[in-house]
Length: 251
Image 1 (cartoon, one colour):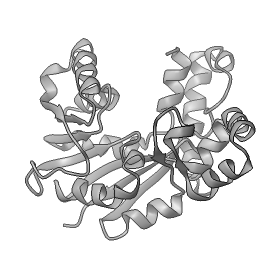
Image 2: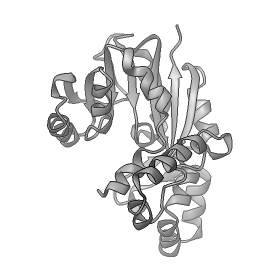
Image 3: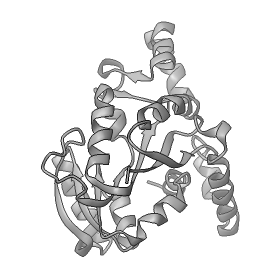
Image 4: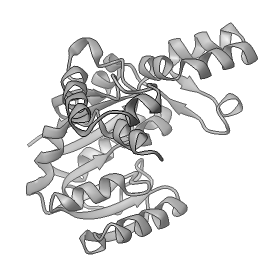
């Protein structure tokens, strides 16, 4: 991945909420993937319990975290389904992170997964999560939307727009559900208090890499600052590639 791509992928994180994990002892990184956020949690001083549904991703996480020099921060690493965290006690973790696509990939079981993430977090703790955005993804990946419209027809495109669902047959063998902000807010309701919400990758998503790679360090810092501010605007919450929420669990 180019430097610009790495920059852009991180630009919409809720930094204040991410910093809130610095005072916790043990964090569950659910759907941890290759360890991008495992490393960040370790840098914040947390001990991390790593879980992902893919054994391959669990192994890649171990390698990445080790190469980054944070292997000592990982207290456990295992194959884990976010819809079934029954192996963990209620309130076992000081906080839970579920960034990327886990809640999008479980589709109709998202409420079950949300309940499990909240259950294993301590009362009054935080669950930091993100889902893929229907409208933002269609904006950022418009060339793909046009290509699929030509191949599969207007009904296919309309189905994505109205439901947010991507099916295996037309999505490279992967199925997922993308969210609108109103839908994610409804999912969170009853599970806890939303204390912060943001889009992710609103301004930089889909921009030419030549443009981003050509920025000076000072220009890049200004762009990131602007990105973070814009991503919190109410009118932008549906316009990034992901929607990010910090949820406080019931005390």
